Image (cartoon, rainbow, N blue to C red; front, side):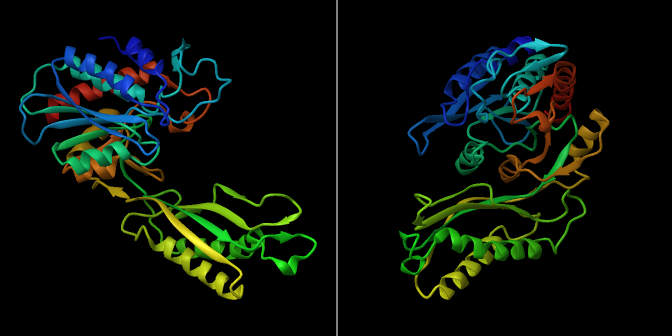
Length: 370
């Protein structure tokens, strides 16, 4: 099993989260079985009618414990004009393509490491998941099923070979302000939902300042962050806007209530509605609530990856499947080749030398933990 051709074959399959990931699982399953793994799938149909699945591969005794490598098979969308997105071209020591770093490179490294390390006593498990990019949905399916319980785990993400032992949570809501439409020449006949959003904005900034008060120096930024990333509303420039919808997301620190910001937004919206004299209403719909995750710095898996990589463990502000893997009962750490700063963009790539080094570290992890 050769690392670069395997990664190129994975990149060639379009596994954008809106598509089925089953073709990727087909390829991974063939390679896993050739390496002596028993396999099974956990399948479902997503909210849009698209078939999805997790692939669970086990080699060794069918008992709790051992080591798991966890990687997601889905990718974010890519620009139609990026001609090499699915080609996996190799150039100047780099392999380009959507998912090369995030995280098909880890999938290839995990399989190659497992194929090389054939002898182990404890179970070695490969967990290939769906829909991480849209809510860690595949990992949540594994957690809900409750059949897999590794003792140690490495969650694949592009961390530049730096162990990541903790990250913030992720929560998001959609807020819709509903006003009264009317002719824009007669503003008194209606109530603009867009103008109401303008009045709400200072409240959102005030909430942001409140969230900044509690800090954790282990993180950068050291506080809970927030963002309004999407806003839409109105029908035409000469119609009083009857609706304004926006997304609001925040990334809470470990130990913080992941629902607190939602309550603060709801309270601010209630004040806005009360001040409108009944002309406005508000609908708040939760989108995601993912907890923060922490593995202690003294954990054996963290120390091992620090020693092998030569990099001190760190924290990140973005989310991964670490919370779900910890929920399986594992002592876990996030680790992998590639730079998160080149993921989710045109020109995504991974350095082949770094990927080969990651593969060697994963192989030694098998010897240590399985």
